Image (tube, rainbow, N blue to C red; front, side, top):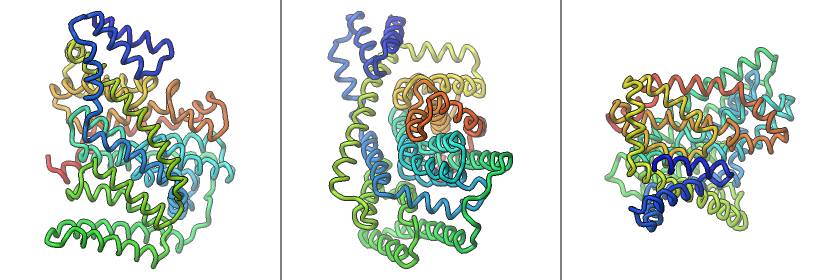
Amino acid sequence: MNSLLLGGFLAALSTGLPIALAMMLASLLYIWVSGSIPPLTVVHRMVGGVDSFPLLAVPFFILAGNLMNSAGITNRIYNFALALVGWLKGGLGHVNVVGSVVFAGMSGTAIADAGGLGTIEIKAMKDHGYPTEFALGITAASATLGPIIPPSLPLVIYGVQANVSIGKLFVGGIVPGVVMALFMMAMVAYYAHVRKYGSDIAFSWSRMGRAFFELGFVAVTAVALYYLWSHEELPGWMRFGALLLGTMAADRLFRFEAYMALLTPVILIGGMSTGLFTPTEAAVAAVAWALFLGLAWYRTLNWRMLVKISMDTIETTAVVLFIVAAASIFAWVLTTTQVTEAIGNWVLSISDNPLVFLLLANVFLLFVGCFMETIAAITILVPVFMPIIAKLGIDPVHFGLVMILNLMIGLLTPPVGMVLFILQKVARISFEATVKAVLPWMAPLLVTLAVITYWPQVTLWLPDLLYGK
């Protein structure tokens, strides 16, 4: 019967069916043949799979990313990154990484980064004479920062499936995201040295100083946010009003490029760490902030654009939640048939050493990422892995970041790598050339994966500091 379930799933996939339908059909086939489970169980389990308060974050984070892209905020982020690091050798490569770090704090998905900021970055790099392959490779690699640096859509799904604090997962992604960015910038510097790439803007103390001053003001705002929300004797509306008026005055006074946009991750992380809102409510706060910037502050959005953004969000959300619903019934069948327990016992029979398990898990997840969509992989595999890591004493927050990074690397591998297909269209080159261009940029990602896998404190230090062990 277990062979029927897994065999039916693989057979359905081989016919070209979408993965959600393949999971549903395999589960229905198993239930029908077994005769011991009412078919209506499929409906109940699918509804139960999406009937979750934390999953409300999914449509709101998707909407926030779409709003940021459509409101022209990506251009502001790009210009800010250009002022900050564009004067370095291989400048636009560094701009590419820094821009993705900033945008990752707003969108939460690699697809939004590749389709929004990536379009601007590839065009700019080609216009400045960089080879298309180099521009495409660094853009693809930096797009994977989206789900690592909070907020993160895949981390929300993982947190729901693993019953782990989403706030801890978000905070746990900050240091690994910075490590990834530094490794990618080191590789850009290496290519710039070998290929004799120059800088893309002239070095200017005033321009760079202004960018650092802007960053410094963001840090000051973060301190002010913590101070205001730690003084509960003041009414909430007064604290919020003071912060909003202060940021608006600073932006108008100094004519910052991207100060208000840079505040998005500060508001989200600050709000969650001070208990102002939950991670789910943080998604709503991100949408509210994006609407404020697009409609009232920058005035780059109109109602016609909002209709299109809303329809795109509905379409993407429907796809994601349908996959979650289909995977929930498949995962439930795997659990009730004790397939997950059998897999766990088999893995532990090979070795009960956590380091060996993490190595095997990395190899397996890298393989899975080549063939399976990220959300589906998380919802299917988390129930399999959770009992194993519990027995081995591996922290679920640490494992969550390891799992997500593996699956993000999968977005850059054929045949299912969505980032590859998006950037192929943007760069207008063949799929084969796209894959070839991205391959060298696997190096910084794999090095980062090794670091966070075997040095758990890279992930756990900040959550332990803010939330306690």
